[in-house]
Amino acid sequence: MNASGPPITILIVDDHPLLREGVAAVLLTQADMKLVGEAVNGTEAIDLHRRHRPNVTLMDLQMPGIGGVETIQAIRHEAPQARIIVLTTYSGDMQAMRAIKAGACGYLLKSALRKDLLNAIRAVHAGRRVIPLEIAADIAEHAAEDGLSSRETQILRHIAAGGANKEIGRRLSISEETVKAHVKNILHKLQASDRTQAVTIAIKRGIIEI
Image (tube, rainbow, N blue to C red; front, side):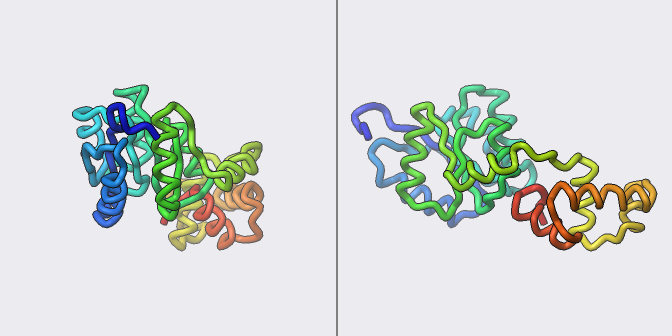
């Protein structure tokens, strides 16, 4: 750590005040870091990033209104060099992949130790990527798999909400037989034995949210 130069400026984006307060308290103890803004949603985050141009942004993924992935994309569109670390409670490989593809440089669970967060901020500021080994391993494990199509993901969300094939077909204006075919593909791709297991796997991996 080099506290003699200008501090690393940081923006926190999270709709939970206790999380923001906790991170802010940690940053206050670091001579080489300075909190320049706090946003509670994606719209505020885009505005504050535009105004302060922080060195590092700490971004939640689950927020009201514009989600974290969309916010990352919007910020990176305006500021391609923006360095963003995702802070989330979800470790699913698909969610991590979406965030990384959107432009996130780091991905940490909110349960990470304080020193992990501080080390990640310094590493990302220095131009490195930070992804925990277990999440990187999950991404690698599923990288070669045939992912769900947008229609299959849509149907899986309806299944998670308790919809039967006939009802799903009516809602999506497709036949019950077509829904059954999609469900068969979903079970195969997720290596699930039934609909309930498919939903459980999809939630764990961050393919769908409930």
